[in-house]
Length: 133
Image (cartoon, rainbow, N blue to C red; front, side, top):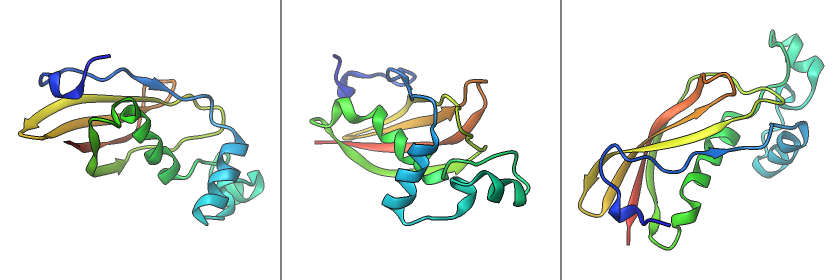
């Protein structure tokens, strides 16, 4: 495995493909986060809100971005991030997480990150600053 410090600008991390989103993922996240909005777990509530079905918590999707950096936990940590929610995630969506190095500033690496659904549509875009130790 290569180290993050050896990456050059425009290099990418290995993409991470999540298992299809399940209702149970969202029920567990509701309990962990305290966000019990029923549009995330109950079909009828989502439809009543004008959605085609239940949607994943945006923060659930965002939190999964950390999986891109898990293999590098001994090299440093996510110091900062800026994320924009760009689309909804539905049950059975398969999300792929991607990161490309955009800047190297001494001991901080700046990555452009994206989470895409199985159709290639970005559902999250942003940047993550990884601090090398």
